Length: 185
Image (cartoon, rainbow, N blue to C red):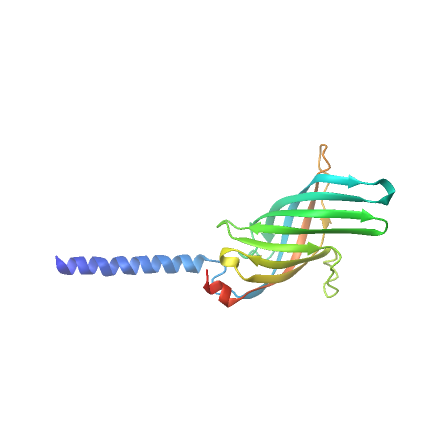
């Protein structure tokens, strides 16, 4: 009886250890400390509030929601829920959009970034709409930083009223997760 109990404990420990190892192997971030990832976000934009001063200028608060798609069919930045808040300013010859975004994965972990359409990366002329700056994240993305030059591709006009519009926003992301932040996970 004693031998059976010891055998059962050893086998149970081995099973639990292999199950935990299997979970680690399925983590798309396991071992990844940096990389480059091309992805596109499929966005619907909703005007929330507008300040219109005629010929002097306008400012419109926008909310954007959508999903991401990794263009290399890899797990990083794929199938994430995206939500952004932005301020669209048009005044004289000035036209820009600044804002911030949160990308949430299936585990609830988040990547946070800010963006500026005046910050263009001359080394990537196809990404001529602006740049996201990744400032941090939660869970497996704790300690993440990076830059994401992006393009803005208009989609067909949406039916109905309300000023909603759609865009595909391709990104070329260079990211890094500091190992000290990953150890705190």
